[in-house]
Image (cartoon, rainbow, N blue to C red; front, top):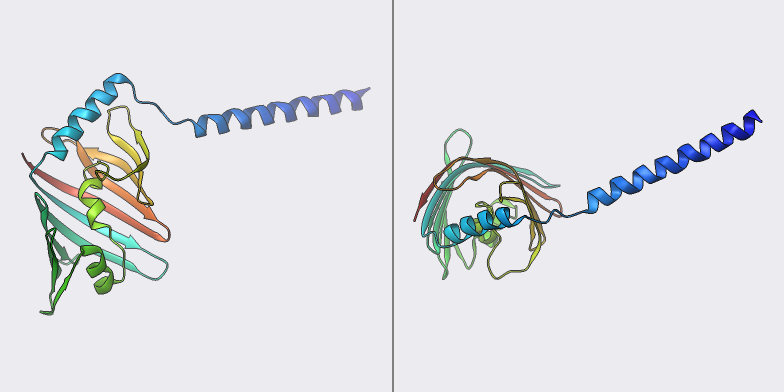
Length: 209
């Protein structure tokens, strides 16, 4: 009789465990739908930043691949569609300066060499053997999707800010934001693509309407 009860208890416990696992799996797979208030905050912030003419960000970037690790301090100046990206090592020495526009990109290294190309991604890959998605990061650093490109996933936090963004094969996560006028801006951005991981920590934002 005890054996039958024990077997019955085991079956009950097994069923409860399976039920709990199913419930947890269901919770994990649910995508949070933004409330109307969250959506209004998101829309107002996105509209402002998409129309922003100039901005500047000071940040540190650590890139890791299966082959190497890349570290740099970066000052990124954006003026409409033109930009300048200054790369320095962690001691403060200039590694390269990249000037870009819709028509061309020029990279000048600390050794006095000059490289020219159609896009910053190709030049940076040739110089440092790492894929840094400059075109997307212009918007991703701000917590925005790249315009006119399919968004595979976009999850918000409770404040109406991007939490997880998937676009062009990249997974972009936003663990932290900082107070900034007039809207909060990311202070850390994590980017993942295949074997590439980029950890961006932003210390300062300057926004110019």
